[in-house]
Structures are given as C-alpha cells and as structure tokens.
Image 1: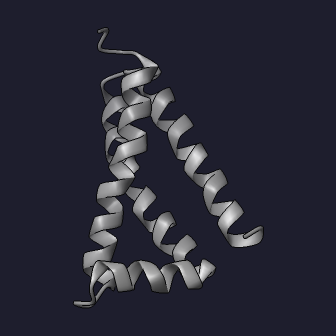
Image 2 (image 1 turned 30 degrees about the vertical axis):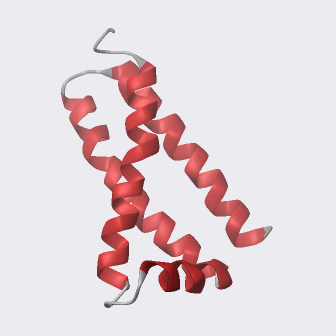
Length: 96
C-alpha cells in the first residue's frame, strides 16, 4: 500500500478518537464503571457531545505529523473521518 493514501488516514482518523474516548473516560469517569459512564452520557446528550468533541482532539496529532511530512492524501483521510464525527456530534446535540 502506498504511504501517502487517503484510506490509511481515514482509518487513523476513525479509530484514534476511540482511544481519545478511553482517555476521556479515565479523566471524567472518576472511578465509575464504564457501563454506568455510558449510561450517564446516553441520557445527557450535551455531555455526550462534549466528551466526543474532546476525544476528537487526538486527531490533531496525526494531522500535524502528516502536515509536516507532506502526506497530503493521508491528511485528507484524517479530515474526512473527523468531519464524519463532527456530523455525528451535531446530530447528537440537536436532533436526538
């Protein structure tokens, strides 16, 4: 596979926020069980959107790396995945 391709960037941008979500659970969970944490977030859409938004910040790390290495196509994949998460966040905040 080519090094500078959109698909690896898309996968990075799609799965790295899951690690960011785990970090947010460790920071905001305050020792509560994961199931209870998810139950609280699913009942409060605004808090769920905040946690998802903060977990998206981890996408800045590969974005800046790809920008300095001039991996423009990979960077494009990261941006597309981040935009899909942004649409999900807007739907959670205002529609559901």
